[in-house]
Image (cartoon, rainbow, N blue to C red; front, side, top):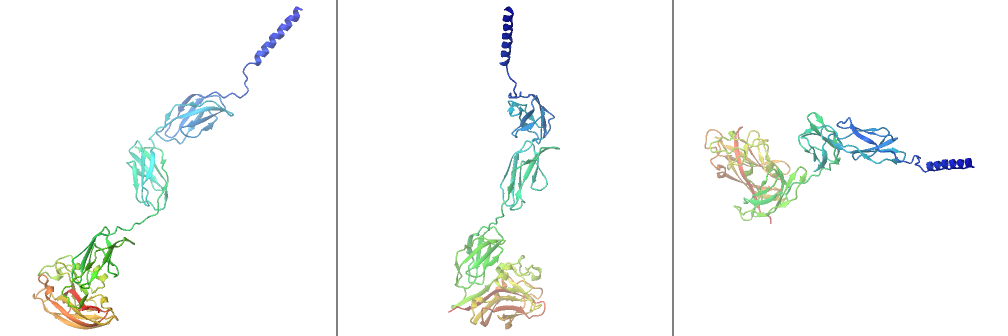
Length: 466
């Protein structure tokens, strides 16, 4: 009986031990892996670093800075493409199947070398320009725009002014300290817009002065070199100045005018000046001025004085723009002088090439009209000089009207300038009949080779229109 009790007792003990054993922890593979330990930085360089730790897991995830997690099976990770001179944080956790340990932060580290630029911006983009800027701790940088070569800079900003319109650009910059460089940092790409060309500013401060019988001085202010002026409804006159002498106007006549600035193929808006009316002047009752040319705005660069030979004076060539635009034709031996002697000089050498011809007398109209021609003339030589007054008809034929012999100069030597405004004292009048709007009046000389004369204040007067 005792033996039976002992056996039962032993069985109960064994059973209890087995029961206790079945209540202990189970290792079924559902337990998270242990977190890594002993995190370190090794082999730190300007653009990379080796991150190490201790652990027994089958794998690990590593995060450097703001980058995405990277999975490795070793207990180290080489972080590449880092920015030089930059401080980074990092962390790692163990991985076993779908289970992870807690994240463990590693020690911060700073890459070696020059700190790369930051805060890159591009602004002020136009069709041909853009301004680039950045922040940095060094004084020297290199900038690359598009496919261009690197530009060394000692500033944290640069304005490019020779970009191409309607073009996309990339750009990047890096810091430089001696022979050490940071990494290239790319800025935001941008595109230049198409070129927009704006017209010039319109003229301002228009004024009319020096109004007389047949002319007026028009002036304005502007910033361009070229302008167009319209008198009444006439064709525009191109002017390379901010003044224009409106000559050849009719007496006792009201005029309107306007001007605009020209720059290349662009023009400003027209600006209208104040209207004006030419004076009565010494014009017979019932007459009107068809043409008047004083040549005053055609003065040359050297002002003559009494006793100065005209050969010593400078003269302009070719025909001044204003005269050409008004329709005057001049031969190849002429000059325009200042000091009250703005006038044309004519020579004999060859009548077919040494002459002055007025514009077509368009104001006359198609009906044949009798006109009175007046002009001043002076021969600055020691011998008489003969002037021919001719008409070039609409059919291009020449008809001589009158020959006038100018008295010889008071001086027997040299070609002298008359005293003061001596041209005005020698006024000549010629009656011409049957002119029409297509005719021109021509002046030349039939004197011996080498003779000269001055011509000024050419005026054509016709009866008023009925």
